[in-house]
Amino acid sequence: VYMQATDHSTTLAGITGNFLLSVSGIALQNFFQPSLQSGTYNVSLVQPNFQSPSPYYGFWGSSLEGVGFVMAGLRFSSTSPDFTLGHLLMGYSEVVASY
Image (cartoon, rainbow, N blue to C red):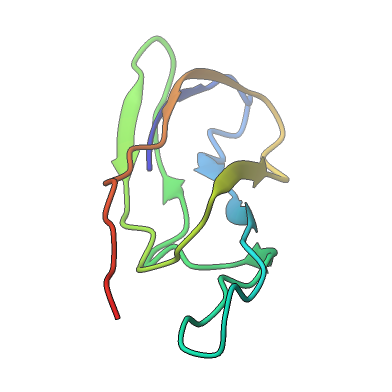
């Protein structure tokens, strides 16, 4: 996951926050195939915490470690006082596991 943002706060508090990954799995198909569990996971190796004084857009990125899914949504929450989110990107790899 990658993010760009700029801080507009008068105290230059920076940008901090938390990413949560909400995934929809697939039900158990047969005895030999494990299911993908639906749920919300905090899987980011590092959560956003960076300085980015206006007018600059600082860049932050981290890996979302090894969560299988059929559908996924990314939630970002922050208590930073005033910032503009310029760009948010979640990349993924399509991998088919065989058992």
